[in-house]
Image (cartoon, rainbow, N blue to C red; front, side, top):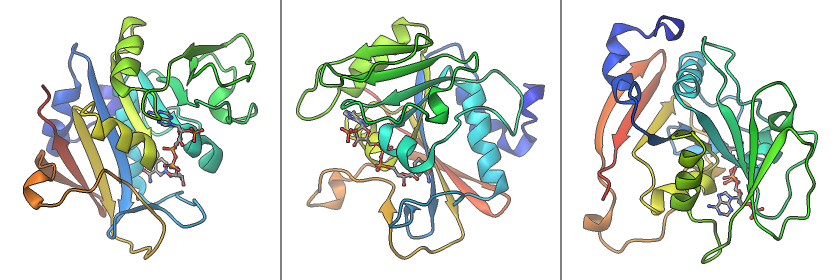
Amino acid sequence: MDKLKIPVKLNCLFAPLQTDTAFVIGQLGQSLDGRIATETGHSKYISGKDGLLHLHRLRSLCDAVVVGVGTVIADDPQLNLRLCGGKNPVRIIIDPKGRVPLNAQALRDDGTKCIVVTTAYSKIRFDNHIERIDFSVENGSICPHKMIETLANKGFGKLLIEGGAYTISQFLSAGALDRLHITVSPLIIGSGKLGINLAPVNFLNEALRPETDFYKVGKDIIFDCAFKQG
Ligand SMILES: NC(=O)c1ccc[n+]([C@@H]2O[C@H](COP(=O)([O-])OP(=O)(O)OC[C@H]3O[C@@H](n4cnc5c(N)ncnc54)[C@H](OP(=O)(O)O)[C@@H]3O)[C@@H](O)[C@H]2O)c1
C-alpha cells in the first residue's frame, strides 16, 4: 500500500478495491457540465493533478485497464503507471472492426501484456506480443459480461474500464460495473462529448441511483458510486 501513498482521508475510497475478490470499476474525468472531451475529442487533461493521481492509483490496484478503440485513436494513451508505484496493468483495447493504429502506444512491446478484444470481422494482424480474443457481436456490441468472464478466466479479475464514453456506457447499461468513480473538475466546456449515454428513461424513478460518496482531491471531487449487482 505504501507505493500508493494513499492519504488517510481517502482510505474509505480505496478500501473496496483492496480485496482478493474480482471487481469491475469504471472511471471518468469530467467537467462541471458532464463533458469528458471537447467536440474535437481533446481530453488531456480535464482532471487536475490530484484527479490524475487518482486514475493512476486505480490502475495500480487493477489487473487490467480496458479502453475502447475510440480512446486509442483520440488520445493514444500509454495506460501505464507514471504517478504512483506498483505493477503496470495489462492493457486491453476493445476494437471489434480492427481500427486500432498499429503504432498506438497501448500496443507497444514493453513487457506489459496487451490484449485486443475483437471479432472475426477484424482482419488486422498483430505482432506476437499482442493477444487477440475474438467475441461474437450481439445486438450490435460485444457483451460486457462475456468479456469480464473471459478475462477473469485468464486471471484478470480486477478491471478498470477507463473509457471512453461508449465503452463505459456499454458496461453501465449492461449492469456490469460494480463501481464508477466520476471525477468532476471545476471547468465548464459547454460542448463536447458527454461521459455517459444510456437508453432514455421516461420517469426519474427509472434512473440509476447508486450508493454514492464523495471525496475532495485537490480542486477535483471524486464521486464514488457503488452499484448493487444481481
Ligand atoms: N475524460 C475521460 O475520463 C476520458 C477517458 C477516456 C476517453 N475520453 C475521451 O473519450 C473519447 C472517446 O470516447 P468514445 O465514446 O468515442 O470511444 P470509446 O468508448 O473509447 O471507443 C468506442 C469504440 O470502441 C468499441 N467498443 C467499445 N465497447 C464495445 C462493445 N461493448 N462492443 C463493441 N464495440 C465496443 C467500438 O468500436 P467500433 O466503433 O470500431 O465498433 C466503439 O465505437 C475521446 O475523445 C477521449 O479523449 C475521455
